[in-house]
Length: 539
Image (cartoon, rainbow, N blue to C red; front, top):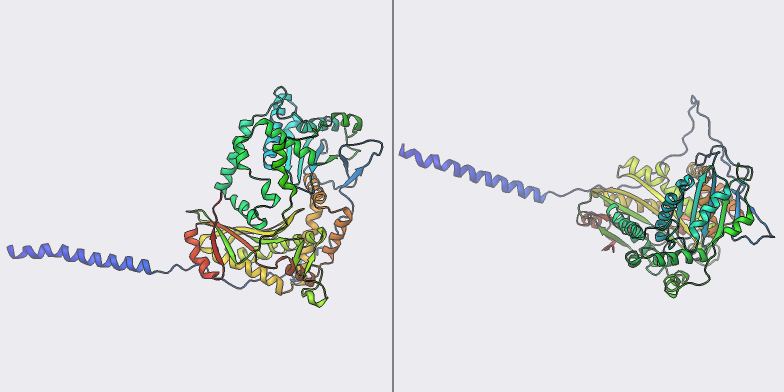
């Protein structure tokens, strides 16, 4: 029995050694396993020339004709010095406007600043919303519960929609622009602490939700000294804002603005408007502002004309642990760009200079048509290929940002971490393809149907009607210009669209990604070796 002792003790040692060797082999195998990311593929396009089957009972779609009449009719009273331009809803409107109630009157008071952006419009938006809440509590007027505000860099539009008389609604709206509306401690004072909290909370929410990528996009697209980047996100003011400063910001915006009053059609119930009474209620704006405010807003008047030159560089915002990558990719469309839109693709063919000035109408045509061609939801090229065919994303969309001081086309979406490189390459391939290969006539027809149909639908919605009208005011488009633009859309050809693409998509695009940098860099380096990668820290 003593002879068996070494044997019984040796077996566990041998087994332990074998297990260690096996574990080492497994670990070595895991470490040497190469992670295979999604491969890239050539871009594919949908077919738009599929004929109707002979046994189909579906009607063929006819030609959609754009609207030619104005959305609003201007009322001019030469004997009165009105502080606003009065607009009445045009008499011929669709009966299917689901955004308004026939028993209610919608009245909107809009401040528009075409030449320069408003200073601190993000602060004003929060403050005016807080004022509406305070007024609703103080006055107990149900009409104030319908308050809506739409703020852009060049317009601030306040609206109320209720069954009351339009004169009463107008009287409520002008209270928001009284010189003492924020500092008056007697009638509906605002909670300045709550305004500061909301401003700070929005900043944290943007970082949490990933909306901070749009701030970086704007900074890299326009440059840090551009007015659009100077008038927003004033963190220092967010922390120190008081009622006097808030009132100064409001008064500066009021003095800077051109005013537009939107009323329902004169045939509507309770739509008779008292012009004389409206003038008496109009806010008495101050004639001067404190020097501190003048200095803070003066940079809005200095128009930055230097466009940051885009090179082959991808900006990365680190979001450790994220399971997806947010993507922003696109171009700035300057009023002066290479390859003139409207001329031949090769400027030498018509003897014109390579750089050409674009007017507002040409920019609008290029911006609208190309963003829709590439990114109009499920019928756009990017959505069809990168989602429907390859499954790289839940959705990718195009956005046309046509503003007075800068216009741009942006494509945005999110993709899984392992798809990042293939997703970015797929977008770049499509942008290159649209410049070198003409679209089919079927795709052009589908694009026209979408754009003209979108325009018609916007006129069936009171909110969109006003937004579209204010956009035209800010960018300087007249009703004649809009009709010309619609005519150009109707006459769009494959060759013309290719010219637009070569003009708008000239140079290198701006690319910004937000995701887990350590996980996406190897894939980007592999699929986009000629592109530089730069980390960006968001303040």
